[in-house]
Amino acid sequence: MVNRPIFVPSIKKGSLVEWVPVEFEWFPGFSLSQKQKSIESLHSSARKQGIFPVLEVSTKSTTELGRRLSAFNLKLEVDGELHTLESVYQSSKVFSLSGQHTELMKLNPFQAKKRVRELGRGEIVAFRCFGEEFATEPKNAFYDWLYIRAIYPHREWVARNIDFYGYSDIEFNPDKSINCQARAVAEYKSLEMNGASDECFHSFESFKKVIEYAQRKE
Image (cartoon, rainbow, N blue to C red; front, side, top):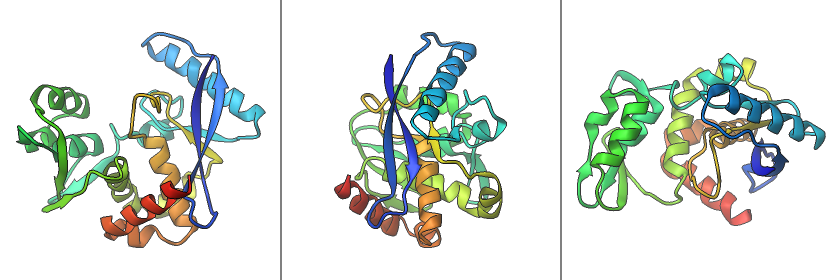
């Protein structure tokens, strides 16, 4: 048995997303079938806790909707061109020794994630994108903001199609990872419910303040 969070959008003042820990049976292995067994197990356990319905947001999702919302499939416009969110994120990293590797934006997301590990030297000291430089703290702020930038232009479609109690990402292990696409979806839904998505889409600083305030409340 393992424990993973389900992310639930919050309308509580000062809160953004509620992390709900769920214990479930894990099916080891890297194959798609094993990952999807783990997803089904997680969602079944969550349902017993009254958390239903839940959308898995990853390339391993059993639904087309969940796969489309993965950072490896979701597209983001940069300088008039569309790129996968994951590739934009990796190409935005600025390393203390090797600098920024903008060429990664042109790669597919799997290649970009692999190449940044080979090219990046030193600590990540900033993110650079859209002709601006962004802070690395809070650690998840820039990634989550890129996610909001990607789905906000489709907010009417999102409002019609994405209405779940909670969101999961079977690949996310909070002991090993920082960024989580399921949490980003839940954050966007929370911003929408609280009427703050427009301001946060246009301003990283506004979103950063929301994240900082919410994390102080956690």
